[in-house]
Length: 246
Image (cartoon, rainbow, N blue to C red):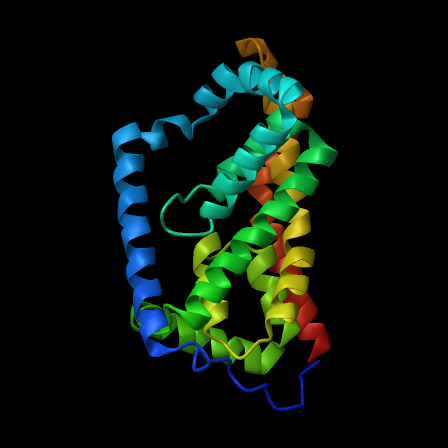
């Protein structure tokens, strides 16, 4: 159903002194540059592979069993950073959560981590990086606002359910729209749950692979097929729902 009520006023950063915003932007830029340089120096990308996940899964699992607090905190922080362009890799980390923590606990951890990451990107775009993001995603912002005007909450749900845009891009773009933050977070969490379960479940299956023969097991093949088909099925289902609502 289309929403007849006018959109709420767009939040601004006018309550933050210009001097504070300026220094906050410089501090953020410096942190991003240092983080990027550190990531390049440590070659973090090499660890974002399923071979590395299989190789280190037992070691990480043992570390988690012995010191759950530090391991869990580290995972949440890294996952939250995946909501920014600095460490893209939220999908891989979701699979890793299943391999390390299991289905139920992994899903809960990813839900919390993704909410934290969404908040970071959303509020950074809304209150600190508005001009930069508006210039970078000018065309996409127009499409986002049009989709929100036509379909309201259903549009937020769709872009979360169907991974047409990178995780961090959705967070930044939504920060520039008129949607209230509480509405964005609630619908985002609901929309991401199905995909989160699929990705985490794939991780639980990959965690069980010890030989090449294990790859051909029905459970692993079924999980990977579901992982590959999910975006198409979700997109088709959402399209039918919109047509029915209209």
